[in-house]
Length: 371
Ligand SMILES: Cc1ncc(COP(=O)(O)O)c(C=O)c1O
Image 1 (cartoon, rainbow, N blue to C red):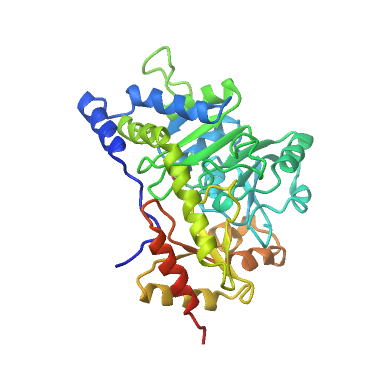
Image 2: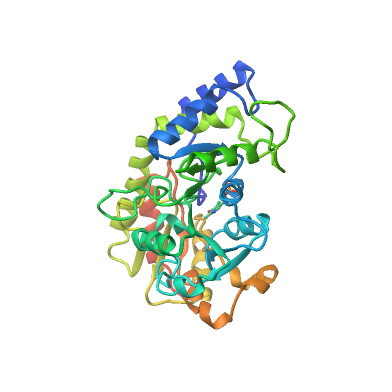
């Protein structure tokens, strides 16, 4: 037996609807499921307008260009996220400004953020890392007071709320929110993504950019340098089916979180995210006995593997990547990134992981001794 970190949830409804898309002959980007998936996303994230696209990465690129960000502009990003967050800024010909993160949860450090806002800064891209957000009210106020755009990278936070009151979903604070539907994500279409906007004009511009910049009223008249960032109708059928079954997905993922919390309660390991307003994408474990100790977590990972359990390290800080060195500032300001990313690993988290599997994982963890 080998327990992977992730496995996609593929239900009979997903198979049925994707075959319907195939049988209809509408296998490229046009088709009924496109409309149905977009309108499901819109009901979920009301009052936002939803545009499907080929990935979370292209969603971020479309968001930035649709907001008018380009040459000479700067965009703030956190030091820790998946690399697509910062690459999208480069694709838009803007310059990223890499801001330190909170050492406990890896989200952008809001106390330091205002110091990085210069005249050139046009937007902040905030990642809700592993489904966890910074104080979104505070961040919205900072962006508003400086007249800059707020873009939410929701690739890891589908269905998560900003706080325990569950009043506002993550993805409904910004001018744009970007989602990934990659195979390991909470909602998946295989590959795929979506970008959501509050403003009709931003949505219209993103639609043009996604569809080769072609005029919606005159075929083969191109109004700007666009892209082909479309999702297929088959992918949209998968996504639509997943949203139809979202209550099942949500219930299962919250149950996984509960089992991890229960079965690790007698150990020195802590589980994150541990609060039920966060719908876990990946469950991370850490121990306060080993902070900023990559050797410990690496050997924990190898030990788990030898017992048939896969795990994965956390994302690495952007400021350590050579190709981004021109954008990072004095390395000493980023020490909190290492405290965060060298103090945990991600454990198996997917629908289909059983209570017995989690019991076994937590029991195995208890047997680990670091030498
Ligand atoms: C935070 C974050 N942003 C962006 C992406 C990019 O999404 P995709 O892989 O669909 O391009 C991911 C996905 O891995 C992610 O985790």
